[in-house]
Amino acid sequence: MDEHSPIPVELEELTLALLHCRSEVARLREREQLFSTLLGSVNAVLWAFDWQQQRVIYVSPAYEQIFGRSAALLLADYDEWRNCIYPDDLDYAAESLAKVLDAGAVESREYRIIRGDGQLRWLNDKCFISHQSAAGQAQIIVGIAEDITEKKRLEGELHRLATTDVLTQSSNRRHFFDCALGEFERARQFGTPLAFLLLDIDDFKQINDRYGHQMGDRVLQRLAQCGASVLRRGDLFGRIGGEEFAALFPGCEPALAGQIAERLQREVKRLGFAHQGKSFGITISQGLTSLERSDQSLDALFARADAAMYLAKRQGKNQIVRG
Ligand SMILES: Nc1nc2c(ncn2[C@@H]2O[C@H](COP(=O)(O)OP(=O)(O)OP(=O)(O)O)[C@@H](O)[C@H]2O)c(=O)[nH]1
Image 1 (cartoon, helix red, strand yellow):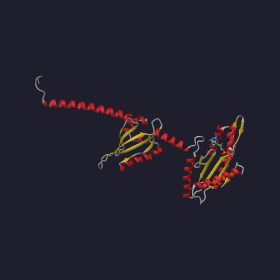
Image 2 (cartoon, protein in one colour):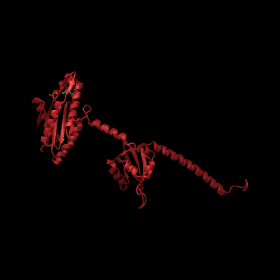
Image 3 (cartoon, protein in one colour):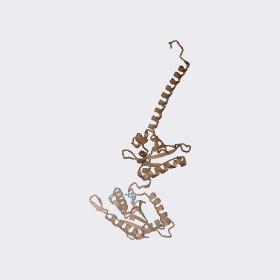
Image 4 (spheres, rainbow, N blue to C red):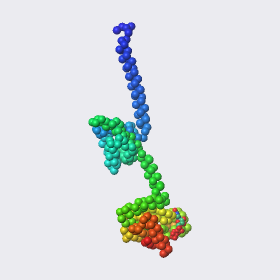
């Protein structure tokens, strides 16, 4: 073909199509780059899972960052994902994933993973079926697993602040009575024993006056530690007022509750405090009562323990009175 002969129409069309394809490829590459940047900047892993083949077919770049593990290994073997789930949460994670097959979507599943470096992370993993398959076809589940570790930490901290007495680190009044109410209802429902104890430091005002408020605070802290050390697992203990504490003993017969109160009385007497070269000790007055058939509310137990404690004060303090 000489240089003046016209280009065949087919060739011209082919050239145009090729040019168009090239620009399309460039455009798609640009978009892919953009999506990849976007996915990489989200603190969540987007994933796709082939249910029939039990194979992860896609994970976004955040996987390596959040899981601290290789995405290539995960794509080669789904057990990589299963193996990094915190053992206590494994059944829940597997069951909630399977649920998506019936429900179509599972809005929120929270479970813990162990990162490649051993750190624990909380995930909130939403998932849904990408396309409802015809019988026999692959079912693809897609999901977004968000790292909620910091949110969980803050929630825990908020809960701790809302339920704990700042000075003594024991339960505060509201939390103590919330938990006590639950135990009271359980004891009534199952007919199990329950004991309630109130205790108050004797002449605490004098301690503040003689040794200062800071020393008074120290006394409260040591008393709370002493209380916590004497109680059994499952018992409740809280600071319910200035120098007043309460304890609840679920499943505890009156005789055993009496022994615990006596032990507490002895342990508190053993506490020693030093101030400007002088040492001093403290005593407590306790009011103890146990659940009776006629008790319709926790208040009934509280009122009896309170009356018993005030009797202990009137009778000379440093003693336990049963109500
Ligand atoms: N250091 C300190 N003192 C507190 C705190 N809360 C309450 N108090 C003090 O506890 C004292 C309680 O005094 P009172 O109610 O007279 O009781 P008491 O001196 O123990 O007398 P009895 O109960 O009859 O033995 C008051 O002086 C309060 O100021 C606290 O958080 N820290």
